[in-house]
Image 1 (cartoon, helix red, strand yellow):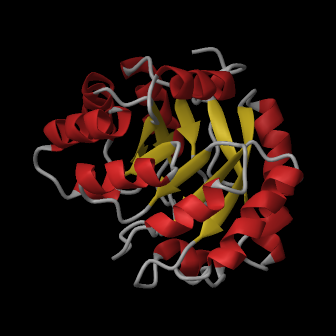
Image 2: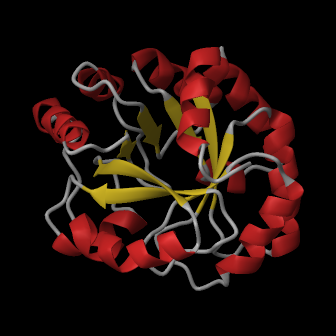
Length: 249
C-alpha cells in the first residue's frame, strides 16, 4: 500500500464497518519466520492493519518489517517506543506524543530526533495523542517512559487531555492501558473521552477476549488493538478471527 494514504485508509475502514481491528506485533523475541506466518494469519483473520513495535527493542527491526511487507498486503504501521524504533520497510508511523505524562522527552524530545528519519524513510506520520491509563499493574511503557498513568476513575482528566490533542492538530487519540495490563481502559472513560473529540479513538491494553473488545467498541472506541493476548494463545488465527468479527460487528 502506498505510504501516502494510510490515514485515509483508516478513515475508510470506519466508514465501511463498525470499527477497525489493529494487531500489534512486538518484534522483541519474534523470529522472522514466525512473524511472517503471523502476518499471513492476521490478514486472513480479517484485521485491518498491523502495528509493529514495543516499549523496548533490542532486535533488528529491518528484516522483520521487510518480511511483513512481503507477506501481507495490510498496512504496516510503526508503533515506536522511541526514536530508534524506525525502519523504511513500513507504510506509516503513529507519530505519538505521550500527552498524559509530563516527561518532556516523550512529549517532544524523541519526536524531534525521529523527524528527519521519518522524512528520509518516506514514512507517513500519523500524529497521535498517546495517553497511558492505569491498568491495574505497572506496565513496561510506564516504566520506560517514566510517567504516571491517568487514574482509571479520572474521566475529568482524560477528556481534556484528548481534546487538547485534537486542538493541537493530532489526527488520533490512543488510550493505552499497557501491554500485559491486568485491566483494560474502562468503558465509561472511553465514552467520556469519545464525547469530547471528533478524531478517531484507539484503545488497547488488557483486551483479552472478543467480548471485551466489543464492549470497548460499543463504548466509543474506533479502533481496537490486541497483541499480548495473541502471543499467549496457541490458536492465534481462530482468536484473531473472533476478535475481527466482534469488532467489525
